[in-house]
Length: 234
Image (cartoon, rainbow, N blue to C red; front, top):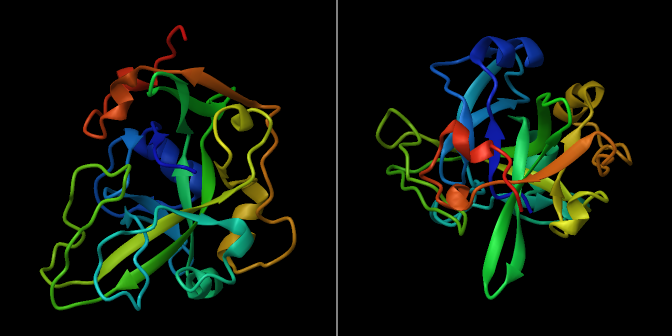
């Protein structure tokens, strides 16, 4: 799965890489967590980078709690929670790394940050939804961070997203049995446009990626500073 990730580039780098303009303020994120409002690029406005809450709430849900942070690529067109979003509401989730945890024994785990060797940013495949009610509440998942307001207007629509996962490559397989779908740059526009070609959501090769152990400080979703991405001795 993908339960935390990083986006450490500066605003101008962000906008240049994705050929889009950020709507509102932006600060680098070193420990992006579910329940937080994070930058995404949606198919209905690909020229704009805006913040949605991580944890997809289907349009038909009775309430907005228990948002889904991941969606399996193999069943996007089958699961009721994702089927309509897969057909109509896709997004790109910019990142430059993601975390996975490995059991080390006695109930303890060690976090690792997976990124490209050269540190370049990338887009993870995502889906987004809009849930509307007279009042908006926010729920967190198991990996959740601090609750944040999802809309400046009381009772406004709750816009959420999920990250699509697939089988891991050889590197990530040593850490977890799933990994985020990392899109090749030339595939990003096809994903947003609704392309359903076979292989679009295939596993990204491990050749140019690295996995580095990092401090357990990242376990706390409230810890979001540059030090958490620094590699340490395992």
